[in-house]
Image (cartoon, rainbow, N blue to C red):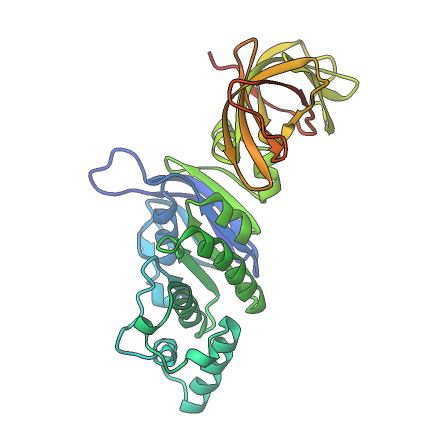
Length: 355
């Protein structure tokens, strides 16, 4: 593993609770990791601890085989061979694009600097802008200059703290994919902080969901969505709701009885055969609910949100439960109308019943 964070706490004076509490994660060389969570959850504090900008009060941060942080030891950022990209880009307004990139190339010959600047300009697609100044560039171009400057010294780890937060939504989504391609081409190992799920899914090989300093799950996007490890992850990632059910295990699979019918998970083997039936809450994503006029179960449309190719319907069952459904946009029903629905659930996710 290239980056190993083991049981790390980060505490600030005057705060009763740690900003980061017992976090452990690993990042392989060449991987792109993402930390996601609500504002104030501790993701930036963890990033700053990895960078050496905050000491840890417990645990260790290790780069390759070298411990760089532990209680009483904080190797300075410049000794960690890391690059950082911040929210505000921090470009020097009096320097050209090439000058900004050259800033981190200390101790190299002029020819080496010129060659490396040309390499990273090509990598980020800004060869034609090398003599322009930051105020002459768009927000997306400024972001790519900041990335090029961070990549120029060939850091072992690149840290990015909400680098797209000042950009509009369309540009953020497009730039996230571009940045992923750039990092891949540079064979860079990177850790990225964001509060935007679409950014996280677009850029991350592995994603960590943090709440109140705790890392709930460190996994790929597919498993975060389909196999959330905690109720918080289930609620935070994607559109979903909970309905009551009764779970049991038989014939090697999990079965759940719900108002929408019996649900069976054919992908996961049961933990134990013949488990006693238990009351539970069942996670239903919007893509688990299918509009079907012939279905026995009917639901009333409470809200609808047009998404271009589809609507996101919020629906209330006769029993009072609420579910959500993606419905093709040519099925344009009115609010208050009752439509038929059925559940098509591949991954049955349950949690302990909450009253």
